[in-house]
Image (cartoon, rainbow, N blue to C red; front, top):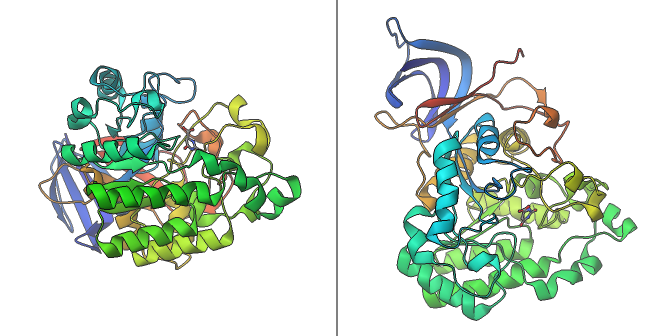
Length: 426
Ligand code: DOR
């Protein structure tokens, strides 16, 4: 199949240029102005929209196998495609947990059958994510983006050391949900958001995150393991990662759109504001933005974590942790960070595509002639409202519902195939 994508502003070689893109059998066959093809090709005119390398999310929960009422590989990857993503890394808090090759194969089979974009699964660090015994990391390594117990921190230092030694020998990163369970409750005292203070509500204490990162960095120093910190939310973690990089450790980290654009002053008693780690103070948000600008924060993940409407209906206190993110991350970040003059579109592409591609060895991260096409096409000029009722994800809980934003995804080409096309009238 041949597609001609006309009148684009293409991100190529770290800059933008007006060009058409010709796709032939899934490959970027040509890029240039005034391209022409004969009959048989499908031609799309994008009137100057931006063509970016397909976005890559290193942290999503697709919920299948085990929790299909929340999300499936099909619904989650269609949501990803609608958001401009061409690859995602899937977290292992599933049933069965991918802790052996046999269990991972259950997930791989569904991915091969149903995924609309590339999915790289994580294997779990510990059996059943129970924190007691190492998973069969060696058997899973060839098929896993890395190893994570996301949803829980690994409490045992000795076990984390062994996990890092094993991951290092397998050439895979440890992807850490850092949370020291002995420090969780302190959050009730330290959370300082106006709403949370007034109602005695708060998420996990900042120290539960950064103390475990501090512990892990010591283990990275010992083992030389590649280490990636999930959903960084505190200023202290940003400081620790900055120093670790300065020291030359093989450390990367991600934060998420909600930690960059909201503070605990924005909370209301609604499950769509509840996730773990929680939205923190303005100081934490500012430190994350500083980290994003100086290179400490490597990438932005959504931590897309769908739950059913009932599970999110209990307000801040009674809802499960987790919000969806794939279908609004780019517009929120483009609007607030790029149009808000905090960073450049080029840097946003690095954070949302090139950096995760490099770190996790995923397809994409650039639009290159001769290579498989992984492209997200975005209208950067017209404002629209985020409407979670239209999401393809089965999850609807997002703090960004109703926001007016720019950056609607018009088309996503994943591995040369059109995975999403916006046919709505503007
Ligand atoms: O908010 C969250 N939801 N944080 C996590 O760590 C896990 C995730 C989930 O699986 O729902």
